[in-house]
Image (cartoon, rainbow, N blue to C red; front, side):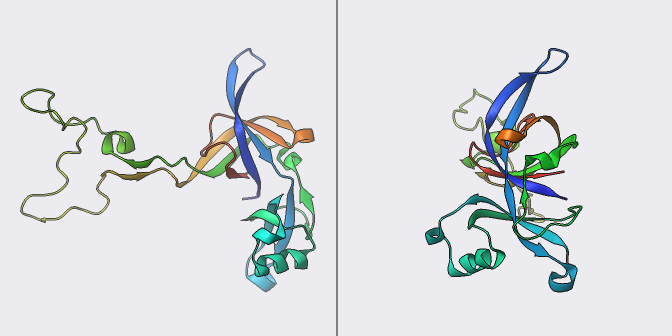
Length: 205
C-alpha cells in the first residue's frame, strides 16, 4: 500500500461538528524524499524507497553515503519502501502530508512500548488462581498448570507464560483521519497508535 513515514508527536483532542470531544494522535508526516525508484525490470518489483529526517554523514556507513549520493539527495535517517503509488515519481521528488488529501482512513504501523519482563496477569490478562486464605500468600498472580501429567509430558509450544512484553511491530487498521495541516506537515487521526512520543511510524492509505 502507498504511504509515508512519520513521527508520533503526541495526543490531543478536538471537537467534532456535532460537539463531541474526539481524542486524536498528532503525527508529523514527511516531507519524505524519494531516494530510489524500484522497477520490475531491475529489481523484480515496483516500489518507492522514501527517506525521512536529515542525518549527518558521520553517522552513516560508506555504502549508505554512496546510496544517497547516487540518488542526489541529502542523507536521511529513516528509510522505508512502499508499493502501489499512482503516477510517476523520480529520484529526489518530495512527497508531503497533502498526499493523504481525500483519504478517509489509514493504517498505521509502529513499534509498541516495551514493558520488560511481565507476568501472565499483565501480559495475557489472566485472572490469577488460588485463594487468598488457607495458607496462600504468594500465588495470587501465578499462571497455574502449564502442562499435562503423564502424557504427552511436555509443555506445548505457544503456551501463554510470563516473558518479554511489548517492543513489537504493531499495525492498527482503519484509523479515521480527523484533520490535515499541510503548512506544518501534521496529520491528526482518531484514537491511539502504537509507540511512544518521538517514535517512527509508517502511515499507509
